[in-house]
Every structure is written in C-alpha cells, then in structure tokens.
Length: 65
Image (tube, rainbow, N blue to C red; front, side):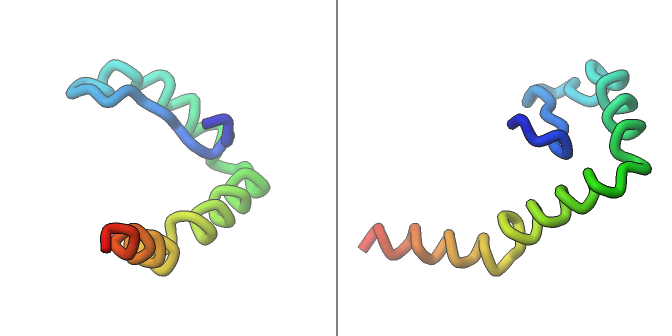
C-alpha cells in the first residue's frame, strides 16, 4: 500500500525482530503527525469498522447461494 499510515512488514516468524528499525522509524514519523493520524482514522472508519466488514462478509456469503 502507498498509504503513509500503513506499516507493511513481511509475513514471517521474525518480522518484528528483523524490522525493528523500520518500526521505530514509522512510529517516529506518525507519533505527532495529526494529519496522518486523521487520515488513518478515516481509512479505518471507512474500511475496517465492524459494520463494513460484516456487510462485506454477508455480501460474500450471499454470492455462495
């Protein structure tokens, strides 16, 4: 993703240990950035909210029948 408020790490058993500097840098970049935090919240409300996820799940289930 190109969204500056998303930290992407590889899906591996050591992904945290292997990326500590990347994680630290991401935290420093985001910590006091109000605009970035607002954008992240907007994204979460529009895409990750349980109502959105449940609606997507139900739509998918309906395609199975």
